[in-house]
Every structure is written in structure tokens, then in C-alpha cells.
Length: 374
Image (cartoon, rainbow, N blue to C red; front, top):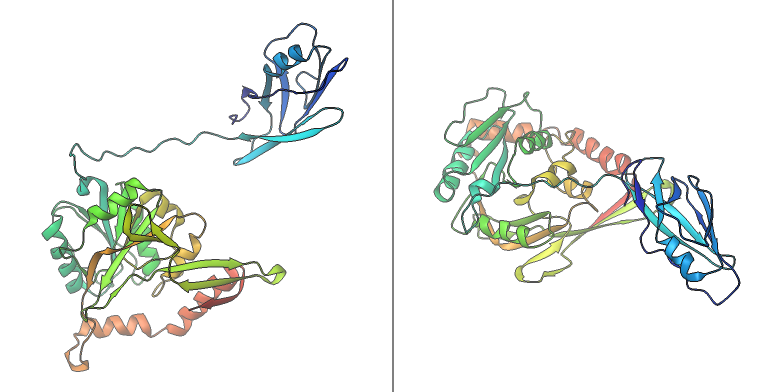
């Protein structure tokens, strides 16, 4: 790889040829020019400082020595591009690429000095809350039983916000009803640790909510994000594992196919598999999750949309042995509180409008003409 407008010696150039009276090589580039770092006796060179160079010699050994001293200088820079260089003789031609760009700057995180994973230094818990301060309190209390010093970031778009206080708690107030995915974006934007754990505000941590297991698989594999499992009050546990594929459909758009299931078990982690989408309880590399982002137009409902948008960029896994409980949703009509009634009315009353936005995202923004799922 060559940095923008910089020069490198092209490695590995050489010619194997039958014995003849003269040997000639032609080099052609489009985004840069050729030159030589030094000259070799009995070698003729034409085109120094140009995109087209001719190197010839009656001695093959001398020609090959000269080829090891050919330089390439980039003259046209565009991110994530490569120059396709032609290497030819009078009877043959081949091509190789020279990548043009900046090197990736490493991002280091202070994970503490403990031999075991320091969850407080590695992980921030993020959530979005709306009209459920009672559930949020239960969530925070449950987290503190197992992780008393981990930072909790709360995105809050209540009409009348209530302060949520305590050590290592950060509450960010949003405009009223700004929405589900906008809240995710805000919460994740405030995370400074290597990993972010997303939880709903009505989850409950238990002894089975082992964040160390999630950190371990992210540290030891190439996964960008790993989901856990959510256990309902009935005992049913869901992982919501799905695979996603896009079928090319021509000018009218592509077709999106969503299937329940996964690809394969992850070596060394028998409880974990590779998938494209997971449950709404997941830990991810903060930078990667932030880059994938959440569409703020999805205000009241949305889940798979994040994973569809991240298809091809995030490597995703799912582990069924990291479990968080889901607060009971079973409520008799006469036992519901005013806040519960208001929450349900606000979330579900505009289903039609949300569906229109959903269709706009699926079928226009992503250029889909059809979608199948099962």
C-alpha cells in the first residue's frame, strides 16, 4: 500500500523468460507514476516520472535487479481505491494492484490491571426509557447487585423527565417522544468504553447475566457483536437468531430474505453461533455499533432494521447461556397503572404511520422490491 502522493518501491517484480537477445518489460499505471531508486548497468529505461515505463536489457539478471528498484508514486488520491498496474512483455501481460490510502490508526482502551476482565473498565450499559421509570429502577437495582460500578447510560425522551441519580449513572434528556432508535444513537454516542451492552429498560439482571462471557468471546474472536438470551416470566427463553440475505433483483430492486436460524457453532464456544440478527440484548464493539448506527425515523418500533443496515459490515454471534430476565408483561386490564396505559397508547396508537415509515425504509431507502421471512 502507498500513502496518498507518497512513493514506495514496488516489491516482488521479476521476469522469468527463455533465453533471447533482449528482454523488455512494459509497466502501465493510472493513478501514479514510475521511477527508479537506482540504475543497473546495461539496462535501458524510458518513462521515468511517467505512467508508462519501458525497461529493457540484453541480460535477464540485470533486468531483474532493475525491476527490484522500480518505484511507484501516487498522483491521484481517493479513499479506498487501488491502482491496477499492468506488467507486460511482448508476448504476455499480467496485472497487480497497489492500494492507495492511509493506514488505520489503532484505538486502544484502558482495561485496567486485573488478571480477570474488568467489566467496569470494558463495558458501558446503555438503555432507552419512556414512561417506565418503575421498570428502569428495577433494571438499575438488578445491575447493581452484580456490577456495582459499571456505567449506565440512559436516553430519556419522557415529556416530564424525572431525575435518575446514583453512582455511575448518566441520564441524557431528549425532546419528548423523539423515539426508540434516536435514543439508541444518543446513548451509544456517549459510551467511551471498548464495549457497549444494550438492554431494554424492563430487563432484570440475574446470576445468569454473565457479561464476562460476552466480553470473552468478543476478545477472543473476530465478532463485532454478540447477543444473549431473554427469559420471559413463563420460562420461555428467546435468542431471536436470524440469517439475512439479499437476492439481486435487477432494475426494480432487490429482495430481502429473513430466516430463523444461524450459520454454525463458533469453535471454542459451544453455546454460541454465528448469525446475522440477534435478540434485543447484545454487547458490541462500541466503534462498530456506532458506525452502523440506528435510523432515527424509527421512533416506536424497530429491531431487525439495525441488523439489516449492518449486513455486510458487522460480524454477529449469539450465545444462549448469557441470560437476562424480562419483566412480566402479563397485566390484567384493571391492574395496569396510568403510566402503563399511557405507554401502550403512545407506542401502539400510531401503528399505521409507523408502518408507512417502515415500508419507506425497507423498500425505498434500501432499494428493496420484496421481502420474505419465516
